[in-house]
Length: 296
Ligand code: UDP
Ligand code: MG
Image (cartoon, rainbow, N blue to C red; front, side, top):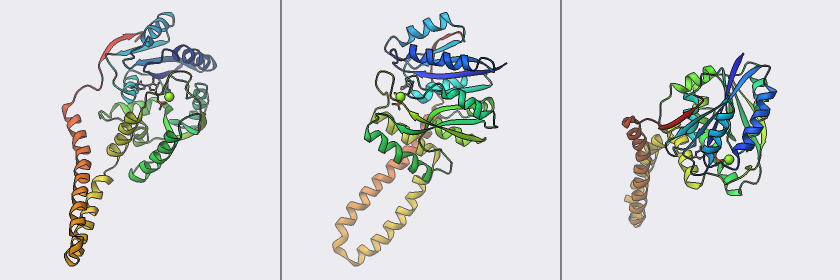
């Protein structure tokens, strides 16, 4: 029988894990005639009792595998560790907080049988998320697609179902600044969406505060687009023309100086964003450190 690994990144989810486990067991049951399903929880340095609950579940159930990080490395890295530790025929990635309905994995599997290597969850509605999060998410996906030479699906998180071929391709991408929802379309293959309404969190709070969201957004743009770098040329040309105008109309001089100074700072910050990434890649540090593994 073919195998399915369901990767679940976990960070301080003690109030969600058991319910998530139960819902995933339903999925496992629905698929039991077709797939041998395992759950692969990646505990991303939780400070609560998440790891104790996961250890207990892995003791009681042979199909619960756990990777325990030595500290918090971030959501994208946790998913990466899951991908690197699977050899299953199919892999599903789902959040631990039940915002992505687990039952959809069954639909994703059925859709994949129509000949798709990637089936991704496309969010229709965001229940109870702040207006700010809705607006920034809406804007971000659209800006990203206009900057990147890639078809990154809009309103799509990491909730998806992929085949072994896709996992194999992703394993060949060692970059440190990871933006999985850009990396998956980058590897190609045939993909199809399944639409769903994103639910509220089952319990707890988001771990994506503004700072983490901005970091993810920057990784999306700087890792997949050279447009900001190229835009510097155009700003340069524009400034040159502006300085010719300033030569004729001297009263513009002080305004121009200020403007030029601000553009230069902006340009340096853009260069810095890329150079910082080069620096991180050059260090060649491991992406994460594993403290323990259970059933794995
Ligand atoms: N998560 C993680 N490491 C982190 C932050 C989050 O593994 O540093 C996990 C978290 O437990 C959840 C998923 O990533 O399963 C998505 O996080 P969250 O629900 O906080 O983000 P949101 O849905 O609000 O964007
Ligand atoms: Mg969530």
